[in-house]
Length: 80
Image (cartoon, rainbow, N blue to C red; front, side, top):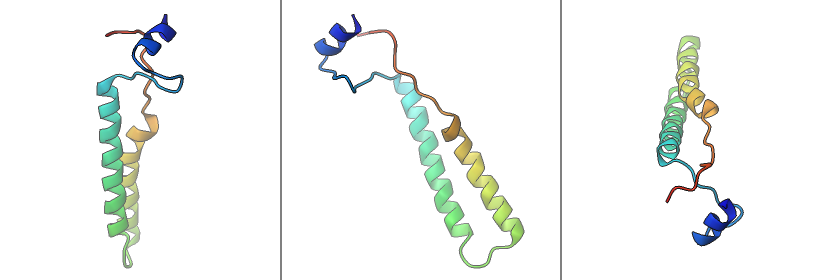
């Protein structure tokens, strides 16, 4: 049934259907990580103190963890 649904909607073997909200949440988390990397790059220019480095790493980890734990599963049902 899934293959018939996929074929009827022009989906190939490598295509998947995912929940839009899950995808948007992942994209938001990736954006936050990208911004944190940019922040940390700027914070570490020059000669930051050990405390500044610890703070920067903490900020980076806080923004990396949601991406590291994110999971998007293909939709199992064929809703139209």
